Length: 432
Image 1 (cartoon, helix red, strand yellow):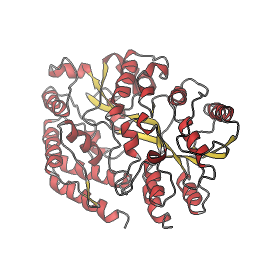
Image 2 (cartoon, one colour):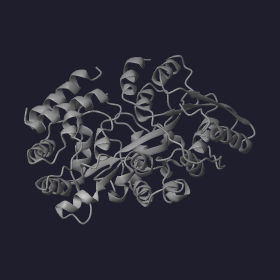
Image 3 (cartoon, one colour):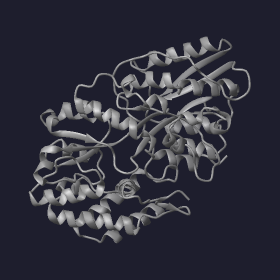
Image 4 (cartoon, one colour):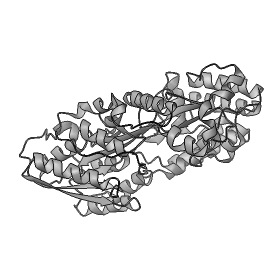
């Protein structure tokens, strides 16, 4: 089984979604078991860095509730630490000891699916249609028939605006499109105000181009293709805006640095940033509370990004009916809602559970936080995983591209050169 070389590349790009505290909950009944067979025997269930004071009681209750509903079945819960999870998955897969039900991000699941390690849940489960479409799509891969996880907990990004700064350009409300944002950025530059706190990258270009109705599928025939007319046009527009003074110096200096755009926005010197749904209460209110009255949230542009964790079923489970039933049980509407009460800022993987975010979002400290939660839940239907999951597109490629694009914005190289260099770098460093 050729799994180590392919899986290692995919999971090098994966990062566990960080979970932050909120309020707690228990477990709800309703586990299914769509596949035929009796729901009995032992099931091993593995999570990723979730065994702690906050989450342990939740999982213990989940196990007890499932075992009560199915007296012939038992569940052994295993948790692996965040560090080294990829190595552990490799060891388990290669030794034939992959847990029956396992928490996997899309990158992990794709390579395991290629190696025949996972069950096609679309084939065996009658309820896959209950899950968020983008989450299902994240575990449905080109060249591999089927779907290989139930979407579990999801994240996305929204737009945040400094309305005091927008007012200097005569903008009574935040821009509604990406193109409108660039126009406002130009107008604000004339007033000495910067709007852009980050530079575009292949991933963000997907979102920006989709807002105009286009597509930017930067993998074609197994090769990365970053240099397209639509992408060049956006980079060239940024270069023009830079000359006008619309882009903060930090955006270019910190191209590729984590959270650079949010940290810049928190200084109150730029008009726009993107951030997660929990930004108002958990970041802005803590790090820049004086900005709170000025900040307004709006929905993400185009096809907004989706960040997802899922629950997969091992193809080698000794008790397949019980394993499938438990995977469905963990990810059903009620249990996902209870989990989101603990995982502040994240959203359920099922459509129905997202219909009323007040059931899991807790009490917001600020009105804009309430609005952010509603907007994030509403855009789950159209959100998709950015980039090219499972193709070997890793963070180093994204960061290199941002650095090259920053050079183009400054005028050191052309937009085409930046995109071509980024494209060549990605293809040269892709797994063979």
